Image (cartoon, rainbow, N blue to C red; front, side):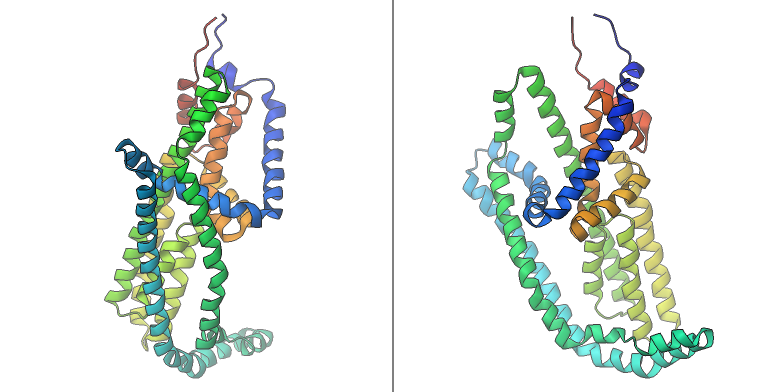
Amino acid sequence: MEHITSDEQTHHPRSIYAIPAAIVSVVIVGIFLHFISDAFLTFVAALFLANIFMPLVALLRRKKVPMVFTILLILGVVALVLTGIIVIVGTTITSFIEVYPKYAAKWEHVLFPEITRLLGRISPGLEKDAMNFNPMSMFEPGKIVNAVFSFTSLASSFALVLLFMLFILASHGQFSTKIEKSFPRAGSLQLNMILTNIETRVRSYLLTTLIINTFAAVAMTVVLLLFGVDLAFLWGTLTFLLMFIPSIGSIFAIILPILLAFLQFDTLGTPILVGAIVIVSQLLIGSYISPKVMGSRLNISPLLILVSIIFWGWVWGPLGMILAVPITSTIVIMFENIPVLVPLALLMSQDPVKRKRRTFRKTPKVSS
């Protein structure tokens, strides 16, 4: 059988037509998912969430632990996390209601007149717009309470995600067996290899993100507590959640606590120092450490990550922005296992040489 080199495989003639077709297909699928998001998004979220618990389920199955006890253990872990979140949210709401009058008075009598006067020197139109703007109205206790009650719909959606996740975990390993029974041996091995690769890489991303986000949240909370900034645990929790959005999330995690510090303290020294430490620490984690770790693990172009965040954010909103990187990683893995789309997978990579070497090393050898 004639030997085909890696370069010849990579530059397959049909790639010229397959690459734009693949890009158009992804866009069309994204548009379709945008319009059916209510029916499909909960399942996708459950799929990625279940991926985190898969190693635990596999370990307990090897130990012959009944599935019912495994499910109860996972429910216990989820309940523990939710309890912690509820305690933090409840404490934060109580603290905010206590300190709100102080911030409202300082904004109305000190900061707002100064900002309005400054804008008036720039343009009378800006001064007029500023007079009609009152950001503190967003944080009135009544509106905070209404916002809490609006989370009931979010709670019901999470319950549905949790239910889907438990069904996915309960059927762990069955899909692989069905593939082996449904396809010839060579095809089933290749398909299971692709699925395993996707599962392993997405899990690595999710677990690494959890660790990095926890570190960023702890760093934010500790810095704010050391300087006595109010609602430190709230900003730490928001940092943990926002950091799931690569690069962009760290910027939003910085702005709010710094603005609160300027509102809280009468002098500029402490807020400036707090802002400098927070900016340096969070940007170091969010814009350097996180992309570097994720780039080496996923080998995806940083520009592609930014584009995917924008695209999947349009498709599924905030949750789409969180899932953008694992979804894009899944697409890249699929492309690198389709010969005519290997060039596209290389274009989407941060290090094409590394991805090309791994792609062709794992390609099964076919004997004549």
